[in-house]
Length: 293
Length: 293
Image (cartoon, rainbow over all chains, first blue to last red; front, top):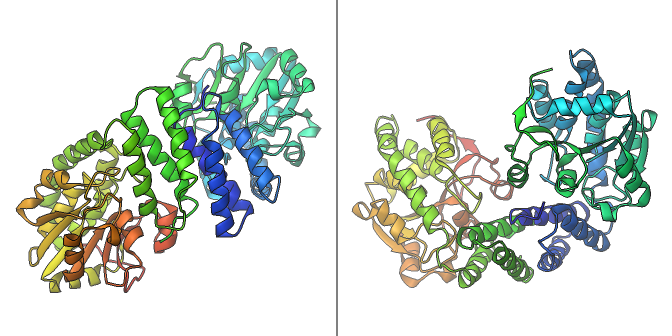
């Protein structure tokens, strides 16, 4: 999907967030924002949002005093998620349909997205979790479950730090298949990298690779060969989050997308209202809700 | 108050809104946004938010095919408000403290602000109105009421279209004083101009003047002499909305500000949480809530 006019203020907000996290003089911050606005004035708006965001954050990291301005936030998000996981695991295990319940919680974790919003606190995550178990999943959860039951190899594209602990709970339910988890190749926004996957202990239950790219999504021509081979050969691909949806929704192979719609641009492109829990795929997208699990 | 880093994405969002309202080709829209970002890269961020917004919207109006991109929105907001006013007037009249109740509804009307948010529908206004009567007013409503009781002349600085109908209900309660209502001198965002004041019939109960400026706030050196004389000579000044607060909070004369805090930047500067109903003044700001009326 292409950049919408409404993505542009969001890019500027992301840049302001990154600047605030790593630069503390008001004058330096404002000078940096002048630079950012001037670059943005030259960015090609006929590409996908993750492709533009990749360029913006790459240039920001060149100017900022750190190459990972979100590291501290990501650590906090991992800690918050780690504390919540044991109780959620028990809840999934006691469900009549653990796979659907794990999908639901994996989508709940997708609210931990500093690309879509400039802060997310424990209170907000906790509140969302209280409602998670009864959230209808829109799209086609039955097609997802059928694909899981048939797949021998699954490539799972992670999205954000913190969220990746919730992904772990879903991967635990994919035990019939060999799962490979792919994270970003370098830090960008609060997207998960290898260290976040290890923090969630996913190396115990799946192979972890990085995709070789610093885009906050999956831009295939920008990904390394090892990742491309996994992508081409996996029986099933599960792609978490808006960034992966934005960059992969037009691909010619079937991909299962799990995300929470967090902005009107994604809502318009996907056909699902803002706030919806979505399990859809690019081949057979339908807009019906599942029953509860 | 000075521009905060968080104001910058908001300026970009306002520009995107104005472009969407008046330009319909995707290519033209994106080209305009490239221009806007490049100008913004040169804007002085050490001024007040309304001073920067004035420059941005003035330049936008030069490039857009209309000098009032928000006119249609303003008409809709006036129509929505007009339909709500008779019932609210009755509710104010039946209150044990009609002045405080009218202040409360005037602040409710301040949610109709396309500077702070890119859309406001009837549903949202209606929902807010259901809760308005029990909203605590933070700041110092007693000082406001005392000043009203003592003033022989009041200058009332309006904020937005639609909202101005709610202002009319408050002006009806200021009948002990000669009231002058000031609106912006030219269109900017959805700020009220003369035609909006006339649509609300305020000419029946107050003198209407325009301030001679196209800033979405009140930048005194930019206002015309007639307005400046009123400003200097009025016994009491009531200033509605965030834009007037942003531009006048550091003035050396007492001004009573009525607004709903709609963003973290104003929350930080004023000391009131986002969502709060505020009646404060720049001389004796205190953060206590009134009782109900």
